[in-house]
Length: 96
Image (cartoon, rainbow, N blue to C red; front, side, top):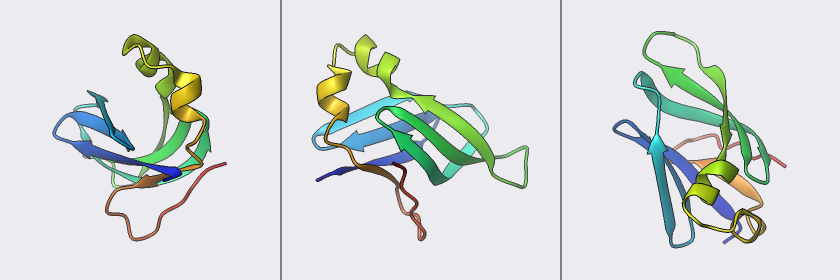
């Protein structure tokens, strides 16, 4: 599998790849992620829908410090991931 999946559950962002499920705190008003605009080996540019705004907003997620805090080698973990998909999205956009 060469893609990971991004979603949100309750107040957490969830990043799934292989046997890994990495959860980290999301903004309290996040409803859902709507698109992945860019994937650059650990750095994500995504569109996110928040309760306080009718339109999706551009957001940035840097997985490298999260992985390092979990004692996961970011270089090894991220290398095989070619794209990130939004869970349950009809239209999936992938990055580089």
